[in-house]
Image (tube, rainbow, N blue to C red):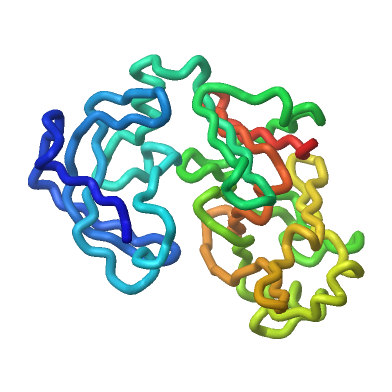
Length: 271
């Protein structure tokens, strides 16, 4: 039951014969490229190239509540050399600053927002830690280590992480997942006793010399009386070692600023 884009009903649509295929962490799509005016809230982006999905194999996208994907990473990894929408916003002078910021509410989508071109000062009252990017592909940064109760459980000599709103959980290397599940007392499928949640430790991400804790209230999901931990195993090797994905479980604890002017990620503990 998705809203669909019908190019024949748009007087500004320009089609191409160029095909497109994208594989995501979950699901994939194929289709064709086209151009049209893309409006996000009150921002009108002219001549934006985008993919019109014709096939999405499997059930994943069928059941998702969203109708499309708005890519906000760097042009270097854009499919078919397309110019991403935020790059066009910058080039067309549609944003006051070359950055965007994200707040994910713990209450679901009710209060969550993405702010193009601005930082909301209310959410940065605790100060902003700026972290330089280690690659201009995804929003990729270097982590120093990951600790639980003062002990390094992974990434002891540094590793890579991407901050990604498009990933729901915390994606960690498979062997690290085994270690985390064992320390927390969870089953191999991630199930954990709901009564033990209050006694679980925080998981602390050490980034750029600062500690960013994620408490059990953030990484344990409750559903239908069952509790599961919000980690998934995913092996993504990079030139600089293993890769972690700091998804929504992490982002719900911090206001995140994606700064294209300085190529940095800003993190601020939520008030």
